[in-house]
Image (tube, rainbow over all chains, first blue to last red; front, side):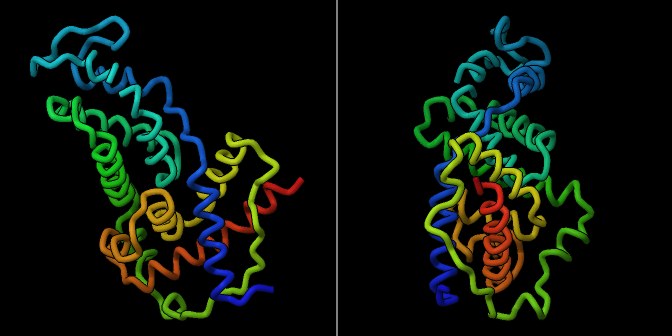
Length: 64
Length: 168
């Protein structure tokens, strides 16, 4: 059995190592279209590219 | 956005309790990015900016959409929380070693969501977001002792969950 303090430190290191090596989760496929709809009010990334009211192009954000 | 959306979603999903909330938060993050796009698109620190905004918005969501009294009552220290006694743990050398990376991620995400918010959030901020104990205490408006206790208990609760999931 480990000493309590040593056990805490070992557990911290073990979890740190385990958690940091995790792959990222894949964002939902709907996220991009939701963002684009809110940014421009209309065009979707795949077909769009028209400028929004602010004059910026949502498509550029998409491919960023 | 395509380069960053998995990072943003993962960051939100680890702190939030469900994917729908994490997607709402991710959407907000990228709308903010769009508002600052002229600066961000060529910035070498865009990833850090996005991660910080994601963390801030997630914390905002957690307080906005939960009953406020409940979140902060969970965050308040109790006499028991301030005790320094910690469980003695037999700590293995590895965790989930028999699982591939994607299986490990699924097990860990599921285990994190089984932790109460007052343990999960500081644990995620410490291990995933690299915040110090003091920074976490400041962000969550709780004492340093409370943060240390909650993170320690979160680890102690997580260990058996991961060990049982990773057992052959």
